[in-house]
Length: 323
Image (cartoon, rainbow, N blue to C red; front, side, top):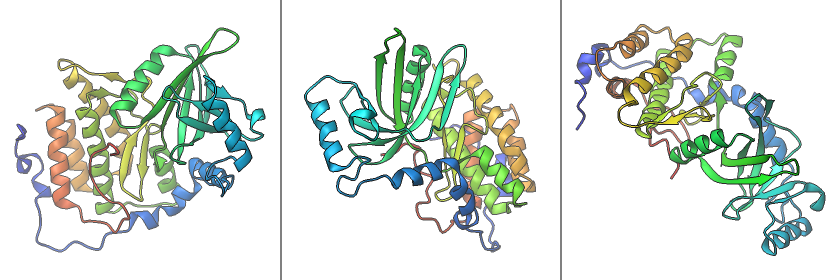
């Protein structure tokens, strides 16, 4: 049983109404162009064109057999693409194989603390596309892998030393569908889209449900900016990425950490919101009259009373984890 105050004291305006609401816009159809134009969508589309029908992988039958023979008969960690005539392959610590789609890179940076690159990969066990994040910073690697595992996003890890003595750390993770909140907001701005009351409610419900999952996993993200929030209009699912500066929380520091994460994310969502009821909800979330987790729980309950179901292919507010 929740120890939070009853919802009606949190947001009376959100009590269920008997008055029929206007039809709900189909978010999936409305924002299909936003998803189609996203860089990751185009990258995956390009990679799919390279899939070989006989193997279901990025390799033809001859190259696929070469890959399997190499990893089955040696302790090899990585196979260079010149040996397969197409793409490099890396094995994680459980000897699962991944092909690196090297024609384009999602991200690359060299900062004083670490060199980081993010690439598209194909899980050669499931044949699904995924992401690998490569870093030279062991502390960030350990930190992020723990958080990804808690979120149910981690597929595997690996580390290998280069000839110069530096170690590269690999994190293989699930590909989160959708677009960054930054791209979503920019699309709304460019297309002069005014989100309806129901659309704003659906988006906030999705975000708060994801945030509640973060609290439940005892993770403080620390960088909940618009580039680290992924929203999928097709499923109304929100997920967070980039946990390199996150931390796992103990019982004593959870309250302050929850407040900071909530404050960061509300700042990013406020420009999308103009409906009076939604603005009231955001205002109540910023009040310091009770715990952040309780306020988030109350807001979720209130929004669930208010929102109408959309006609989506996989619409749910289930656990943030993939079973």
